[in-house]
Image 1 (cartoon, one colour):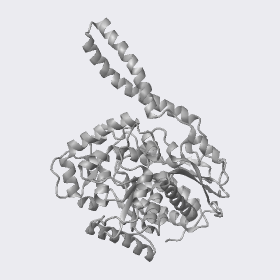
Image 2: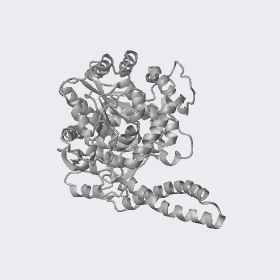
Image 3: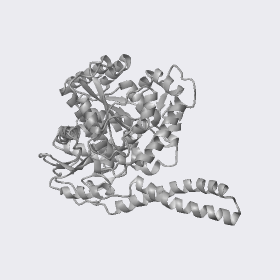
Image 4: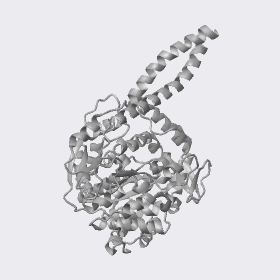
Length: 547
């Protein structure tokens, strides 16, 4: 790679041993999802049966059984060769290219199976949890391979999404200045139709990340390599997809991680049979998914997919933007097709037929809602496994702070629904009486009118309770150190991961991968935990920065 001249004012540190410890039970971390807790809990109440065939530990145990699973060609040969040819574009050691070529080829021949996770790319790499998802997938592939089942980790990059709020939500920590920084595009992205996020020029999106990276010089190679990638990608006008792929190939070198892009027309060109069947079944897929959503709302207080998302299962790519596709006859050339949320996971599993998918709470909810749709499409719902949940903090930081952070609870979705219904029932009876007394309407007509109005009102009150409860809850959360509790939020959901890995380098990457192995081993015994990683602070950091 090109040599770099470093500024005089830089971060200087010595990498010491990184400590790892458990923080809290994972089932307690997402109080808004009864589904999440039941899925992780090995002895839950039987009042609401899970929509999935396996609980988390059961799914992992089924993967680690002695007999290898039947082979399946997870990638079409032509597409696999295209991915192998793409490797020539990336700067890597010859041994790394051979490893990745073998990973891709083994998926195409059926010599290995895939485990997969997915996430759209984001500002400064995206939130820390996206790194944890990929690391968990890598650790799972290692564990299965050690058990005699050759397995390749696959990252499905959702660069065909146009969710700009999610793209711009992460913030990065500038340790030298002691402040949190968002992308300058955040304020300029509202109120207009957006491009697919993978096509965003990284020079426009990542200006602040580049500045922070330029001020950093660690005494380890990973930080310097990541900084070099940012300098070259912004100078050459590359887009976010390419930048993200380069960063991931650098950080996860040696793991055999295969990267598949949702905005790759060559991928979609291989998927005509899937699209033909999905479009033929589109009305029934929508009906089943909506029905499952209503059941999940009743049983678990969660309905992951909105009617609008369900009604737009398919798009076509037109330049950098995507347009809903409402046709009925699928063209032979499906290279311009892009999936909405209803079809995206089904396409992934149709193509890869993964042994397992690594997920967080949100994905658990919407994949559970898609279970009937999977059956209709003739797709197997492979076991879902929880990603690593974790914190990165100064060595010696009190573990009790995180325990208290975890214990605090806003009103969960089910409780908000109960309270809104309680208020709505009382109000509906009063409204019926008013319509009868003041307008002389009969009781049947009054009840019909009141019921319709109350349903809409209850939804508004439920949203109000949820939002206000969350605001009050977050007001009382710790905010210091600002990089540990960014804006009072969970670090892994808000803090961007690239500057973090550039600061602590390969020791932190390895510590997280080791943590993922512990996560899986403990989870096999039903003890799913959240993990903490204690790190030494750089000498020149503003440790009291307010953010």
